[in-house]
Length: 338
Ligand code: NAD
Ligand code: UDP
Image 1 (cartoon, protein in one colour):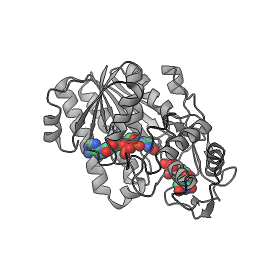
Image 2: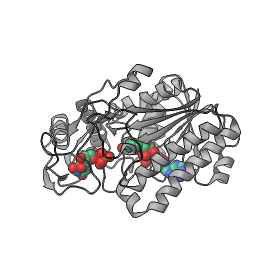
Image 3: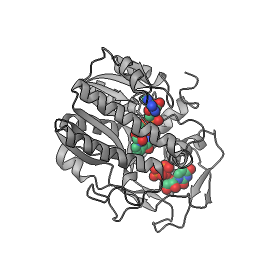
Image 4: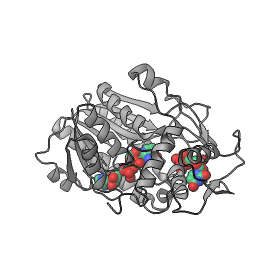
């Protein structure tokens, strides 16, 4: 397949580009580079020895996107492009809704015009809100009591895709509900390169380990979890990337929503210890109040992906820490000095 990756220069997009190329597919990456660097895709080319076609375009600008894609062929789409910082979405709701929803509307119109029917969408476990069960299956309620515009935009886009599929029965869409993507390619050549202070746990821990930040703030140690800190289901970004390849291969008319997670929960303190083991460095931390909007525990029931597609995670949290550390050590400023 020749696959259009919107947001293809970003963290998950670049790792998925690599997995697609390694499995014999071709890649066209479209990105406005608002939260990424062109360098990530140069490194994907270097790692695979294959070419990535790149189109610079802002997907919220329908006319410009259409023009940029003129003459560019593709027969499937993975839609990563969008804004993803939960806290920022609370402060800038209209920007988040406009970017995430407009981008998707442009893309769906474009796919229909071109007769491209295969779509994989980057959704998130945030659509489940505060979980009602220990392990979350796809049958769990979605879009109830969500605490931020980012999460709502993902739930709304899932609805938009469902409505589009209703009107266009050939559309073969998969919403991949990611749990917590972490880690990097084992080469350490590509990885997560957050702008400014990282919002997410693992890149923050990595920057403390490398000496770029003094200490980690652990947000709350009074949750009803074994050690009191928040529990999440961390999934290695290469497992996640391979999940996209499998999802594309299995997409069939209609819409499926599928969890991509490991089924294992790890607490904040377990992540800190795993990173200390991987890096051989101490990660100083202090216990701080809970972060607004956080929940105690979010763990996937990943059995649908296994039974439907034969996909499961094969990499551990220790593997993710080792690879995130390799990336962090060899690129302490991310792609900035590349
Ligand atoms: P990222 O920011 O690294 O990648 C997103 C890419 O989209 C960036 O390269 C950015 O420049 C591009 N982009 C943003 N707005 C655009 C626009 N208007 N036009 C064209 N390109 C645009 O983020 P990521 O971590 O790789 O996430 C990819 C997708 O996965 C996002 O949709 C995100 O919401 C979703 N997701 C991420 C996580 C996570 O923890 N990383 C978890 C669940 C879901
Ligand atoms: N967390 C933390 N300190 C940080 C960042 C995150 O203690 O600097 C905790 C957060 O409260 C949650 C877990 O780490 O329990 C994962 O947070 P992250 O933001 O990475 O992902 P989320 O699950 O919120 O999307």
